[in-house]
Amino acid sequence: APDLDAARVKRGALLFEDKNCDLCHERDNKTSGQGPNLAGHASPAWARRLLENPGAPLYYGEKNDMPSFGKKLTAVELDRLATYLTSLK
Image 1: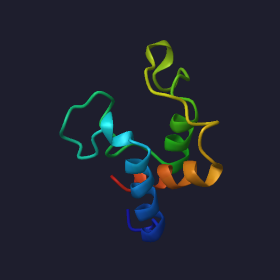
Image 2: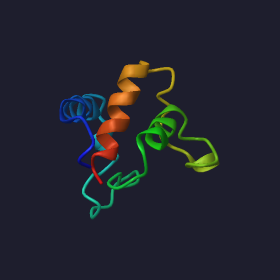
Image 3: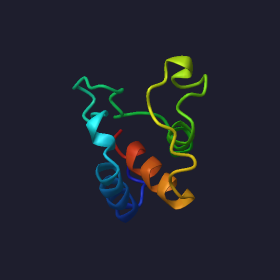
């Protein structure tokens, strides 16, 4: 997406790998993984809410296996990850 800050995307990508999100999630919109492939998913706000509470009914509900990061990451880290995920469109 042309309107995303490239530096923030890069920091989010590093955090994505540092927190091992890539162990469950692919990002190429082609490959299956343990979790959903995250390429092309919604807006930064949508992605942030997913990271905060993936067990919410809007996301995985009772079938959720993804950990919640709402209390594990700072607001800045959540924003960076959300920015990175939406850059995969």
